[in-house]
Length: 462
Image (cartoon, rainbow, N blue to C red; front, side, top):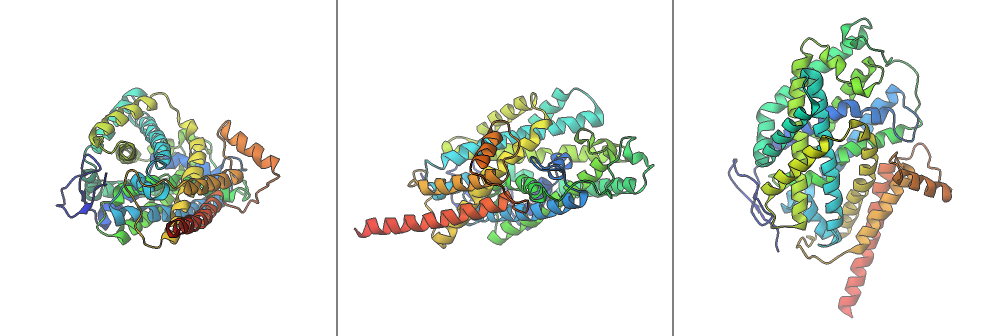
């Protein structure tokens, strides 16, 4: 079965319900830039900066180290997202279909299933944080906010390109104003210790010398992990880009700038509440127009859950190509909503550590294979020949990540820590798990791809 092919279409064209349909190329730089910029601003990011400030398995960072780790990690992570957006713009294929060329048709099901799991997790956390912010702002039962956000999310997935156009025309402007206002208020409150912006809570002195630089790369890895969680979905949207260069630039610049801003604003809010992530929205609400700004960001947060639910459906289509995306979105939206009713935000940091170890080396494998392939188009058919050596490269990259940064997931992290102790490996503090796993996976993939090509040539000649 062939996948859909890129086509020109009117500006109001929508995504076909199955993979066999045409792929409208309607998204320019502003459409994609607005989309990625909005994804970089997240309610999760305001509290999520704690994962950078207090990285799992490492001592807390100084505030200066945390800010620098945020910038370095976001620049690296957003560049990876930009790279992952390019193949979709070239081929018109969604992300998991592209993995047919990397792993083979059947073996691409492995990352597809993992991607479905991580996207359901992200979608769940997004609904949780929407409910948390909504309850704090306007009150009411948490379950009502979860259900409302789940319904809105699901409806938006039925017209995905229309959602992107809405972001460009209306939402991005309101979000920029809201974030700028909150940043001004929070930093003004920090500059005036007696200000009501502190909401009467304990303060975290941004000028204090407490903390360490030892866990700098562990903190940077946390910032990278937030960004690279979008790697396995980037081509789901960039496949509708008019140009390849636009897909890369919009993702790298749009996402990178706003994630840095979001994390720094979150750090300022945390400074006013003594580093308590549960109260991160309190100083925002203390601002005169804080309620309005927070409500804008809460309503906009549905673009995050929208992207996760939509890409989950597209990933499932790699397994079942004839499945109707709209039906899948309805089912997945209901599942994510149900899960959000029983999950807490406390599980977020552990979730990040596992994500980074899975999807950073996956990109490395893709880059290593592309360097060997040198422009030759991959086989994206459903039953493309299996390439188990690329799976080996992926696993090697994953192992490299975990040996440097096992994270804090119970059981999983303990096993990797035990293995590290058994082989006597003590990673230096300057070593980044993300960069190491990316380089290792890419190098191993390139070597195995050369071996694979030579072996195939020998068999053909024989």
